[in-house]
Amino acid sequence: MASAILTVIDPARYCVIDFRAWRTLKWLQGINFSFYENYSKFLDDYRNYGTLRIYHSFIEEIREIAKKNNQTPRQVEMALWKFDKEKGT
Image (cartoon, rainbow, N blue to C red; front, side):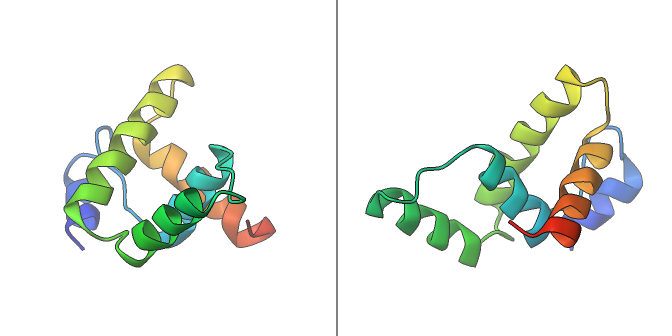
């Protein structure tokens, strides 16, 4: 909820954290789930994707992608969301 408010106030700096966007971001990172530790961390983070700790990590990664691609964090987040919605990860 807070991420949505921040995004409305300043979409050039913030984006909405959503399980679809978050899940796609993790998929794009190529996490190797054959290692128990990686899969366990993924599941733990997935259960808690709405926490401040996860959002901070998420927004930093999104901002990095946005900067490299001359996009806003909101544009990157929407693209990740759309990918997951259409393709599923």
